Length: 87
Figure 1 (spheres, rainbow, N blue to C red):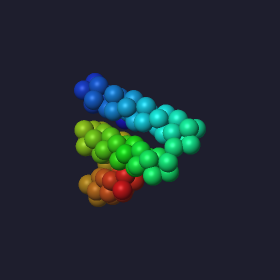
Figure 2 (cartoon, rainbow, N blue to C red):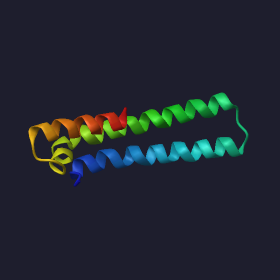
Figure 3 (tube, rainbow, N blue to C red):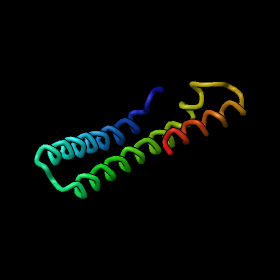
């Protein structure tokens, strides 16, 4: 899939932010931080990744579908599979 420059410019900073969150989670574990705090940060990173996935799919839906089967039924199944992957 080829991302548009606009999509790339929007998504890459979000991914970098999640990368920072995950590094922070690792530091929290190394420091022996409270389990509740760690789990809250893991949930936040997970939700951020979900949002990035949906944003990527929504912004590039046509491209995602055209990479797979060419029929309308195939498009519908591909779309469902992509959304369920993020669910």
